Image (cartoon, rainbow, N blue to C red; front, side, top):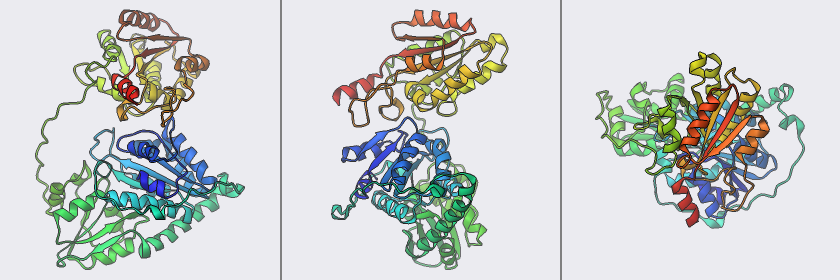
Length: 512
C-alpha cells in the first residue's frame, strides 16, 4: 500500500497509528515518501483534504474506530469533492484482535457516499491504492481503500512497474467558494453533484471496475465475495462460480444479479456486516440470507466451508491463549497498584495501560473509546454521592491525551463538578500499544527528526487546571499516594503526571 501510494505520486501521507494500519505510513516514509503522524485521525484527514484542495495527492491512514473520529470531515468532503486526489486506507479488525469493536467501514462509507475499493491480496493492495488515486482525481471525490487484519498482516508476491510511477502533481489553488464552503445553500447542490458522481462511478464499475467473474465447473453454486474472504472461499469451494467484488461501493448490483441467475444456489461470503447480502437481496438477487453466526470474528477456510454447507453447529472452542498483560517490568504497574490498594474508581482510556484492567491488577473500572476517560469521570463526579465521587479518577495515556484528551480538560474547567476532579496522565513517552510511534509530546517527527515538544504541564496550567504535579511512579509511590489522597479531599481540579519511559520504546529509540 505504501509503494502504491508512492508510485501514484502521493505528496503527503498522514495518519494516526492504529493496528492494523500503522505500518503503512512507516513504510511510506522508509520508501522516501513524505509522511507524518497527526494528533488524531480527524486532524490527519483535515490535513490530507487540504492537500487535495490544493490540487495535489494525499493519503490518510487509520483503523476503523479512527474513521469514526474523522467521519465528520468525510461526510462533508464527499459533498465538496476535491481538486487533487484524497485516498484513505481504513483498516477493519474483524474478530477484534486489537480493537474495542468490529464495525464494518463499508456501512459507514455507504452513509457518507464514499467509494470503496477492497483488495484481496498484496498485489491488489498495491494496484488498488494506485487505482484509488486515479479515481479520486478523475471523479474529484474522496476514495476509501478498505483492508482487514488478514490483508494487512499477510504477504504475497507483488509485481510493480516503477517506470509507470506518476510524478507528484504541482500544487496550486483555484478559488471556488460555492464548492468549498459547505453552508446549506452550497451543500444542497453539492449533495446532488455527489449522487451524480456515484451514479457515474457505478456505470464505470459495471463496465470497467476491478471486479472479476470466474465461471464454475457447473451451475450448482455461485459465490459473491471480496477482500480476503474471497481467498478463503476460493479454497473452500474451488469448483464454484465466483463474482469477485473489487469495488464494493458503489456495488455493481445489476451485474451481480445477472451472475446469480446462472446458478441454482448463490452465497455471499463477506466478513463483517451483511453489506452485500442486504443490497443484493433487496434487489431481488438469487442469494441466500446469511445467518448471524458469520457476522462475528474473522473468516477462515473452515468457517467458509461451514457457511456454504449451512452448518450452524457450534465451532470448536479456540485454544486458551495467555491473556495479554502489561509488560514485565513496566514501570506503570506502580501507577495502577496504589489506585487498587486505595479503592479508587478508575475511569480508563485506550492504550497499552488498558491492560491494567486485567488480572492480577484489575485496576480499571471503565473504558470505551479514545479520550473518553475525562468526560466519563466528570459525569460520574456530577451525580455520585460525595463519598463515592471523591474516589473517581480519570486515567489517560500521553498519546491519547494529545489525541482527544484536551477537550476533556476544557470541559473539566468549564463545567467543574462540586467535588473537583483528578486526572492522571500515564506518560510513557510514546504511542506504545501500536508499536511505539511518536506524537506531539515526544519531540520527534515520524521520520525521527526533532520537533517541538508539547508539554502536558504547561498546557494543563494554561487551560486552567489548578494543581499539576509530576511523579516517577517506580520511585515516588508514597509521595504520589499522599498527594492523591490530599487532592481527593479538596474541591480543586488536579492533574497528576506519572512520567516514566516505556522500556521497549527507550531501547528502540536508542537503536534508531
